[in-house]
Length: 310
Image (tube, rainbow, N blue to C red):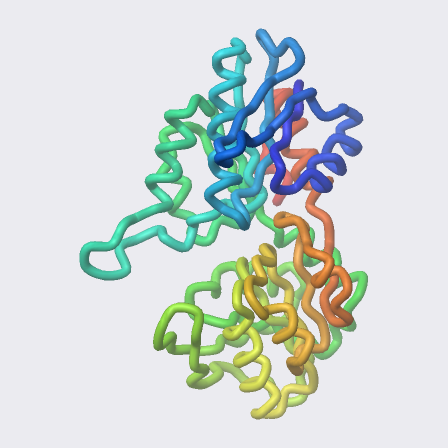
């Protein structure tokens, strides 16, 4: 087994390597003066099972190109198998035609990764499960629910907890978490007027006097989450916390969360947290290194990955 990493999330890759007791492979990823990306694999990988750990987070296009070029380099160096490990799969929100004459960019990115030479893909909490079908190679979509439920049991008082989905699309994810911690479920019905903005309409379920846990896969601008927290508190919720897998947190999102009525926001390190995130008083980061590391180990030894979530 060989582990390689681009520039998107080296801290997570090092933590995965520590879990697996494997050093990161020797490779350089650098840019020419015009920002053209160059990759050089600096060790023999012939006949090796290679894993490239690379989130396609901001800057998404640069990190995607690093992944594609490193995949091509490993393929041309005669690696036996190449697995693209994407803790965060960028472009996942473009999984369907949202209107006339618009692309399905998630499918395009899936094609690019496949054509570059990847033999399989491993990712975490895809925005939409059907994206697995966009790949013509085996795809493992790992779930953060066991990780989240374990953290909730360690840090939250479950006697008065209610799990809340911030929109109808996330009900399946929220229900899975609610089942694991034996908590009731509520749903926020929202209407999005334009990209990046949302308007909360009403809440389905009785949250009065409850400690609410909002659960979602991606937080970007933070508007949906803050609006949902305000709506829950307005109808009698005791407190509101949030558990989100991918902390995109673009623009002024961190400041928005810090100033919001959210008691705590818990995210994973699928996207490398910025210094602003690490210094925010009400944002906490949990690691996915052990989960991803165990999935990589099982892939190499041809063991079941799905049994991780039983």
